[in-house]
Length: 578
Image (cartoon, rainbow, N blue to C red; front, side):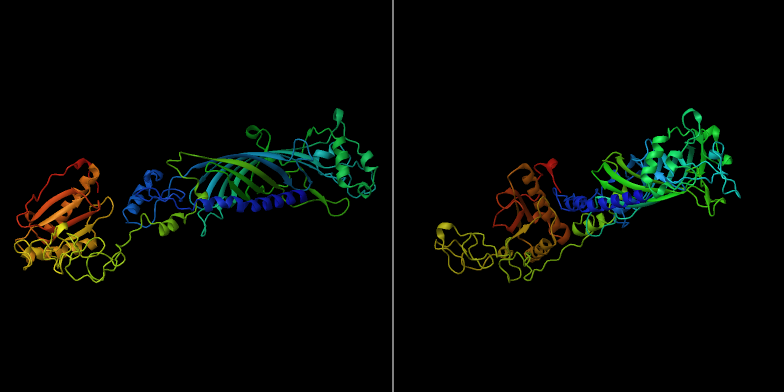
């Protein structure tokens, strides 16, 4: 038993030492990778928003979660685990166990199981174990008067006659068992606060099960004759342990015995079920244990586990229940036997990876919450409010001309518009379109060429409507809050000049999609002005697909006599984008 304890301790220490290596996987998966416009975060264990992982009976909760009616996502469908393995199988009883390397054909067990997770902590497992255990006492015994496996062949000591010669025996056994367990398993370390997941899963379990076993002893040698151990014991009352150690004695005993285990060990007949379990004793067998799994991939993991089984009220797993308090006084040991199965296994996750996630005990339930905080996709966030000190529709962060007077039309950089580029803003330019050959101009924006009729005088009333530029988000035709304030100023100017028209000019002519998007944006501006501010649609001139910034729409007052349609058919309606 000492060897087994050291083996278990060494195995657990080795696995704990490997944890930092496998834990690197969790760190690698935390790196954020974004793809495309929807910005899907690839570092999560699975996409919580994907309905493929949600079983039908949980879809009601999932829909409420997607519609922001319930804060918690539905639990996903997860894979089953199956596994096989082998290990050391031994009895803890009155007769010392022989380890697998000490006994041929003994001390080994094999198992197979199926496991299902019902949450991130708890799972259940059905496991079958087949084991063969062997044991051999290195000290001789003469106190077997009540043990039928030995007293039918050997002369036992009789109480009250301590000087009567008796035959020495060495207790031994071979126990074959079939064990079926239903385990409740609790995962102990999958909740992580500082990384997405772990490469090592530690768990504990308790189980209820049944044990069917049969124990036999090697009491007879060749020809069915009792063994003669005088060559080992040195005769009656000899004490071989004085000059030989237990290892040497066991080796001599194993050389002498034929290993047939032909004799039934002592058993309680009322517990036998011969017709169903082939003359094996059937016992109720609770168990408990600890285990550790190392994740090799999403489908495969390696496990090491130790199960301790304590059959209900049974001291005959090793075929021996008699002890001695004083010479010649046999008594029951009053101590139940137990089983220990230290094993290593290879486990596989089964299921469609497009519809099922890994078993939940491999996932961190905090994964989605932390990812949503850092990379929100589902979280409802308020529209950002950006400062715009001069109220020209361009936020201070991007405004290259802060302090623009109220009502002055600006470009996308927040600077006053200068349509003809003569250096005089449109709001002070008395010659709005000055030919290049007539520049430079004076302080009123009038060029050196002969001044056309009316030039230099008070501007016409339509000149009070300033020009401006509205910027849209990429691929969008929705008017932003900043642009709404800008259009509100335009509406006030048009209401003050009810006879004036305004030209709405959409840029973007590089492709069919750009032309359609340009049309969508011009139409959105006209509809907004008509529906929000009550400006007659016929007061607008619809122009789209012009050269310039593909994300911008310009507006200006119409020149005297300038006309154009207020409604234009969309050029490529089937290519419309939101």
